[in-house]
Length: 279
Image 1 (cartoon, one colour):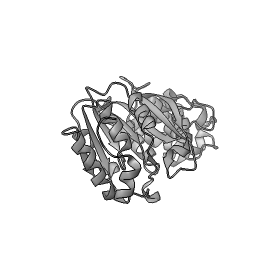
Image 2: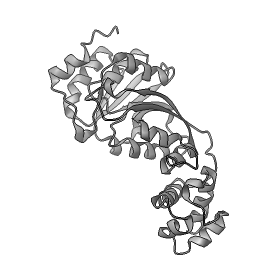
Image 3: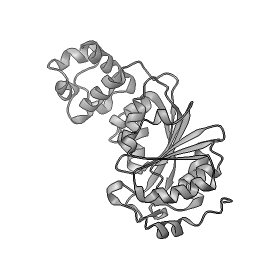
């Protein structure tokens, strides 16, 4: 690396950056791995990149070294800002640091044109962040790819096919609007401190058109209700939505004795359209 920046462990020690469990922090210090993640997002030369939870900046460095046009790093932990400022100084004009909560940040306003999101997401906000991105309107939105690190269990849910235990709300919403695939695992020992689980990098490429038409809010509500009681038949689990679940299912052309995990993404879209049409 030609940026003349000090080793990450030295940066962490100098700034007192012990990872905070309450912020879901697990720092990835292996520059070979951070470089691999950055390269997994494809050519970055013509792209602005959003990074959530950069911490001391291991992945940030890799994104810049791999040629990202500009990186916008959103960091909630004030302790990490001086370390990020050092990286900004090494890459003049190419790193923008935004202090704040990613869940409350208007990311579309921070970039111009289709951007790429590349992040080792803090575990405690990874799922709500992804769901928020998947509900972006209009679609396709302000990003043209998501390259994200999740707990492996979450990654498996994102790509799961109907019929299995891993298939649920997250898989339906992800597969409806994107083409997700698991890229590679990262061993827990690569992190400081090591989490209790393996992590997996996932790529999600937005579909030009969703698998089937549906209102995003209606889709979220229907899918959440169906999987909220996944062991029950749909005619029971959907009662939380409407007093007449049978009529809703009839309108969607779906047998009410089926369970949520048996429905395809397209069938959930049909349910969402029926729910939306009932007002």
